[in-house]
Amino acid sequence: MEKQLTAVFEKRGEWYVAYLQEIPGVNTQGKTREEARENLEDALQIFLDANRELARSEISGKAHVIEEPFAIVENAA
Image 1: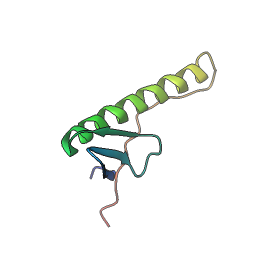
Image 2 (image 1 turned 30 degrees about the horizontal axis):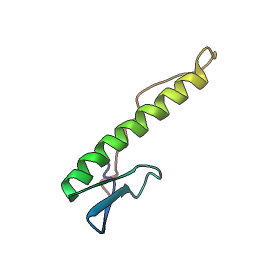
Image 3 (image 1 turned 180 degrees about the vertical axis):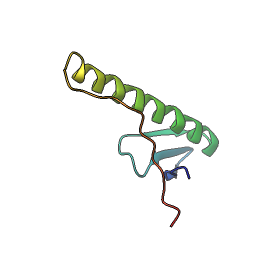
Image 4 (image 1 turned 90 degrees about the vertical axis):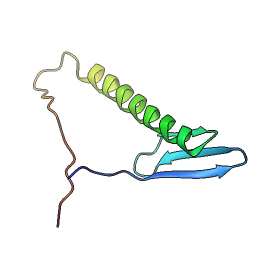
């Protein structure tokens, strides 16, 4: 089962401000809720790419470092 995140949309004047509840720093805006949702997907991808690049530069050249895929699986209980 895939893990779901919570997108929060706040109407502020003519704009929708959007952010992910579980990941501080992933936020954006849009003229419509749909535009804000699309921008939020982009913001999350940029956030993940930037953090991945920072982490890789930190571990570059270090011995005894292992990278592997990691999936978030929600318990069905």
